Image (cartoon, rainbow, N blue to C red; front, side):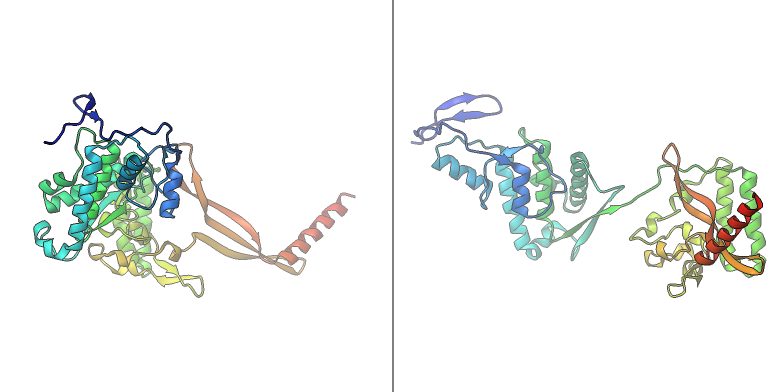
Length: 375
């Protein structure tokens, strides 16, 4: 007849009982920092970590921690603690191994698609907090649920009385592992601009519209035809009716979002791109020849191909028959940050030496003449 173990303590949520008649160990095992141990175990940097930085654990061997815990408890006469989450995660991982080992045989029982379906979660930035990672991982598993059904989702998820936010998220990662032969997981960093301030009166923006229209006569219709609708949106915005769709499409519209290329209407503001060989803006912007309705991510423009935003001209100074050259530079000289953190392209100008030696000699000569005139 099977004997009932002697119960030491029992509540609704736990039971503690005697097992073997051995002398319990009198001292605790030495412990070490968990994060340090994991870094050494994985030989990779931890980008996020479920536990507190100061969490301590006993030394881990390269075997399953459940097996090591049972082995150590047995061989060193130490008490053991188990939870539903511990046992279920172990079993769920076995289920995951089975599905991964027989993914094609079992495919029709889980999904209706062939190959691997990409499950994409849009994010505004790479997660930096535990809460953000928890939410991101759950979003992936909800996408899995949409494909495999709620029953399988509930089967794998930890939802016991002992479940913590940590074990809950861990079970979701087990779920992602379970179906990884059917899905690829991707986080898409969808960035955005929280707010925009448009200065200037409606009349200012109407004048820009008129100027663009005037430029059309100089064989620029291929460019101005794209700019005029943009100018109209500026006018509407200045009048207090900003189009959300228009402003969300300034840089990387969602429909053509990807990589480092500019696909938004910002690219339309530049009729010419830089020639890599000459560094002159002489190449017609190819994006202007494509209807925006038909635009793809591959049609985008690299930021490095845009002009630098500086206009430069050489000027000559004729002084007593000697000619010296300077450069005048005007345009965009940097980005100013306002008190509220807004970024504003800064316009300015500068005068540069074109021939340092000649100009320096001229200044020295002028200074000498000035000094003599004061004597």
